Length: 76
Ligand SMILES: Cc1cc2nc3c(=O)[nH]c(=O)nc-3n(C[C@H](O)[C@H](O)[C@H](O)COP(=O)(O)O)c2cc1C
Image (tube, rainbow, N blue to C red):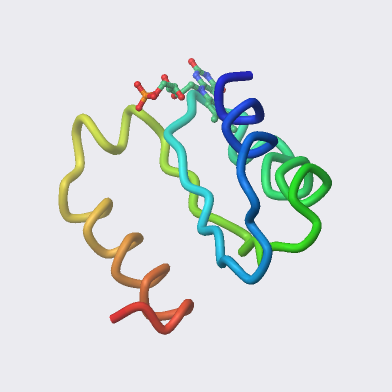
C-alpha cells in the first residue's frame, strides 16, 4: 500500500515507470496493471520479476535477466 500511496500523491503525467520486484512464486502478480489504473497518465512498462531464490543463489542468471530487461526497454 505504501507504493500506491506514493503513486497517488504525485503527478506522473508523462513519466515512464518500470516496475520490478522479487517474489516467491507469484511473479508480477498483476502489479503493472494495478499501477496503470492508479496513474493512467504515465507510461507503465511490463516490468521484471525475479524470484528471491534466484537473487540469493544465482548471480549470473540475475545479471542476464536484468541485462535482457534493460535491452528490451532500450535502457542500456
Ligand atoms: C508483485 C509482488 C509479488 C510478490 N510475490 C511474493 C511471493 O510470491 N512470495 C513472497 O514470499 N514474497 C513476495 N513478494 C515480496 C517480495 O519478495 C519482497 O520481499 C518485498 O517486496 C519487500 O522487498 P523490499 O525489501 O526490497 O522492499 C512480492 C512482492 C511484490 C511487489
